[in-house]
Structure formats: C-alpha cells, structure tokens
Image 1: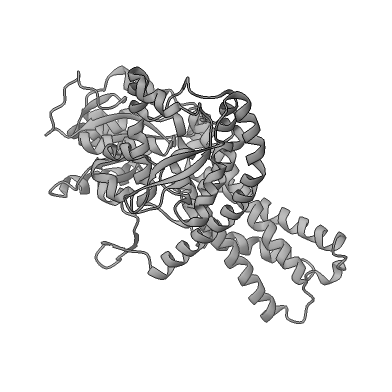
Image 2: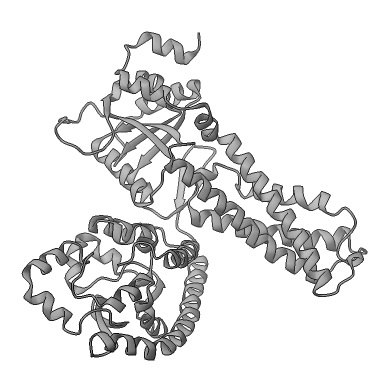
Amino acid sequence: MSTRESLASRETSLPKSAMASALSQSALARILSWPFPHKLVYLAGDLLAISLAHMLAVRIVVYFLQVPPSVLNPFGYYRFYIPFFAVILYLFDGYKSPELRRPEQELERSCKAVAVSFLGLVLFNFVVFRLEPFSRYMLASWFALALVLLLVSRFSLRAIYDALWKAGLGRRRALLLGSIAGVAAYEQMLSIQRHHGYELVGILLDAAEKFSSSKTFSSLPVLGSFDQWKKTLTVTGANVLIVAYPMVPKGGDWLREILRVCKELRVEVEFYWSVLATSNLSYDHDEFSGCFRFYAKPEWSLSLQRGVKRAIDLVFGVFGSAVTLLLTPVVWVLVNLEDRGPVFYDREFVGSDGKIHYYRKFRTMLKDADEILRRDAQLRARFVHRYKLEDDPRLLRVGRILRRYSLDEFPQFFSLLSGKLTFVGPRVISGDERQCYGANLAKLLSCKPGLTGFWQVTGRQTTTYEERVRMDMFYVERWSIWLDLVIIGKSFWKVVKAEGAY
C-alpha cells in the first residue's frame, strides 16, 4: 500500500464534492500540468528559435550582403552551437519551473542567456576556430534574430499556457492552508496579476481562527481545519500545498511535519509570507545554516536601470511629441465641428513631489464638462465611486474614438520631455484621489506617474478602484527596467486591440 493510500485509510472521507473535484481532471489536463513536459516544450521552442534564426541569418547575409557561403562559419558548426545554447539557457534557469516565472523575469533571463551565449561563441571562435573564416555580419544578424525569435517563442508559449489555464487545462491542483488574512492576501496576489496557473481546490483554516460560514472572504470552499491537511491533501488529489500566513506563526514543528509528509507523497509545498511577497529583494541560500539571505540589488544596477528608463522617456517623448504636432490640427477640426472650444484639456495630477501639476490631453468632452459634473449630484456620485464614467454623457462622439485608440493621450508626451511624467509608472491620480490611497500614498509618490503602467495592461477600466490601488503598489514594490519593457510591449498590444478603453 502506498503512503498516500495508507494516509487515506486512517482518515475519514471528505465531502463528495471534494472527491468529485479530484476525479474530474482528464488525462490530458494532468499531463499538461506535469512540470517535465512543460520543460520539454520550452526546450523544443528554444532550439527551433535558435535554428531558425541561424537559417534566416545565413540567407540575409548571402542574398542581401552578397557574402560567400564558404566564409560564414566552419562546416557542421550547428552541431556545436545548438547544444551550447541549450546549456547556457539551462544555466540561467531557463527550464526551472517556467510556469512560476513572471514575464519580466522571463525577459531578463532570456536576454541575458542569448547575450552570454553569443559572447561565448565569439570567444570560442577566437580560441578554437581562429584560423577558420567567420563573418561578422553573420554573427550580428544571428544574434539579433536569435534574441527576437527566442522571445517570440517563449512568450508565445506563455500565451498558449495562459489560454489553457483559463480554459481549465494544465493547472496545478493546489490546496490552500493558513489563516484568513494569509489566504485572502495570497488570493489577492494572484488576482491582481491575473494568474490562472493554479486550480485552487479549497481552503483549510487555522483552527485558532473563528470563521462563520455566513461570512464570505473567498470564493473557494472551506474544507476543514488545519489539522485535516493530510486527509484533505489525499482526497482532493492536490499536487501542491500552499501554506499562507501574513506572518510566520510561532513554532516550526508543524511546518517540518508538513514538509516531511509532502516529501513522502511527492507533493510540492509553497510557503506564502506577505513580508517576502512584497519585498523586491535578491536572495541567496546559505548551505551551511539553511537560511535565506536577502539583500538589496546593487546601486550601480539600479542607477543603470534608471538611466535606461530616462532614455526610454526621451525617445518616446520626442517621437510622441512629433506625432502630437501632426495630429493637433486634425483633432482641432474634428472636435470643433461637434463642440466649439479649445483642442486641449488641462488635466490635474499629483506629482511625485506631492504637489498639483497639469498635463495636456486632447479634449474629448464638452468644453464645460467640469461644470456639468459639479452641477449634477447624481453624476458626481457615480464619478467619485470609480473616478471614471463608463457611459459619460459629456463625451463627444469624436472623443469616444480618440479614447478608444488612446489618441487623446498623445499631448502627454510633452510632459515626458519635461520630466513631469514617465512613460511607464503608477497610475496618474487627481488631488481628490489622494484620500483613496491612505497609508500607501507615500509609496505611490516615490515614483513618477506614468502614461501607461501595470494597471493599464492588466485590467484597465474593468477593475475596481481597490484593485487599481493594489496594482499600483505591486508595480512600485517590484519595479525594474525589465518590468517596464514588458509593460511597454503589452501597452502597444492593448492599444491595437482597443481593449478596456472608454
């Protein structure tokens, strides 16, 4: 009899709904949720991307640059570089639980792995193949294509898996165990990121906490108390146990027992602690003591990233300002055909210094829109609820088109050049909205507000105001230039799809 079966035989059965849930997974869903096939798919995608990049680079150099094929690289070189790339990606943890990696981490590791791989090839060529012909155009073209195609491959796979997860396929079955506060914080963390990789089968609450069935804090069923975790784990068929507490409880015997039993059952254990979940720190594992050492990222790295961020602002600022100058006369005509008045609207916002500033947008509403809002108490009440109106009666017909494709935002690019705004940052808020952030206001103002950001590419107008606040805090706590690059890529996609805008 297996360990799982022996545990089940010593415990009473759970409700039939939990048992039915455990049996509902199809064979395909279980296979898709296994980590090993997931890694094989990523490996196959990487090798295909690198090989395709090499073939395209050869054709570009031969047919467009007229370089003879005999001087591109030694015969049979692909037998070396394909496994070399796979090894480098493996060393950069490219195949270590890719489903647990956030998009900006995927971007960072992929870019670094490709860069190190090509640097290694150049050094290897200089030492081993120094007498062989090599085309610099070939290496440069191959590097650029490999970087692009590898990112396309990996992010396409992420999109495919995300679609499967949303359809209920390939999810890891997970059982939540912990306090009410810990479980709620964990669910919020997954919710604001729109992560669907787990099939949460239910919750086991700490026996010391009082919970009334009439009080709803989660959409998941409460299957029992903390001391029933062995039985529940067995019956639900969960392959991940998530222990969620806002702070580490006193005493660690219970956690050692969980780790021991889960090791026997081949069940993975995740420990959620809100302090670590909100700290953007690097860490090392001390092999002597078993401790995890957390430390801030080096200042030179942060300074370099801030420099790149400012360079991005200037590039987008120059380009966007030029487009704004071209759009202004066209928008002026269209707006004035419907409602005569100025083409620009000065919108107030709270800067990182805590003071009120103004940026310009193309006017999309009636020229006396602010006065209408002040006079209409019912409309004002709807506006204060979310600081947005889905069916705003003040909106012009041409304004709906401008907003749908975010064309009204273009004059903001002038504020990028002046440094009042940044391209990617927390959401821009008005003076009245400061009260909605409470104790989080100081953290929000530690960054410049942005034209786009985590909220805009994750939920935009489909979110509640509380979710917007949490998304802003998520961005501030985890900022990196890699996160900004992911948001920029998603922003363009959202604008093209005109998703969530009104």
